[in-house]
Image 1: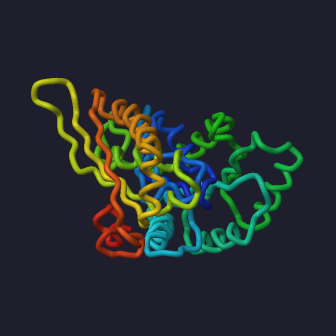
Image 2 (image 1 turned 180 degrees about the vertical axis):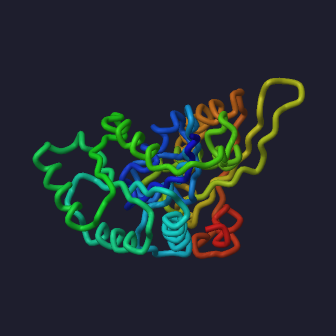
Amino acid sequence: MYRSGFVTLIGRPNVGKSTLMNLFIGEKVSIISNKPQTTRNKIRSILSGDGFQIVFIDTPGIHNPASKLGAYMVKAAENAMNEVDCIIYLVEPRKASGADKNIMNRLGNVDTPVFLAVNKIDTVEKAELLNVIEDYRGCYNFAEIFPVSARNAENTDDLLAAVKNILPEGPRYFPEDIVTDQPERQIASELIREKALRYLREEVPHGVAVGIELMKRRADQELVDVEATIYCEKDSHKGIIIGKKGETLKKIGSAARLDIERLLGSPIFLQLWVKVKKDWRNSDFYLKNFGYDFSNV
């Protein structure tokens, strides 16, 4: 019997959803940062194996939105809960907060089995972890609970095995050699944004978007030209992104180039520009232009 289905990863921002999904897939298909609200779109990744195929959907963190972009992100996460065969709810190893309880209240409106994954167990003592598990057990009727460390791949095999077992009989949705349905341009733009998140100050990253203007292989050599623009909301942020003598922008470009070359399997020539689009996170036009289309969530 061939099993297949859709599994979504939900949780508050920065609990490790992208790290866990990348671990399952074995490749980086969703960007990772220590800053919250890194993932903005639903990212689909495909894991194919002997007799099964899982389509993982990594979602933005569920939070109280302060902009149209934030509202888009929350809607994308909530809609994903009603589209899947299984939900993995990731939390950090501390007792449920008001925000966590709000998420569990929302889970009460779905019929989908929910696995609780208490992530980052490498950061707490066992006694504290057991108290956390009991706290969550009293808040919601989870199908199963798994203490895991996505960073160290601890107990993640048990979680994956439980997901496989709960999948219904179904077709192969994607070819076996496909690991994501995201186009190369979209992945490249997200890789650049990931590096921007790494090198920018705390107040800047949430106002950053990246647009790929050109991705074209040269006819006469094994080289891909990539031109991209980093958009920000304030003139002062533009100067921070560029940095003194262009040093910050150079760091972003150098780090992004390595990941994009791995993505494309070819050397690239990367050029970056920085432009200001004031308050783009509340602009329907720019949100759609940057790929955040409410009709698709």
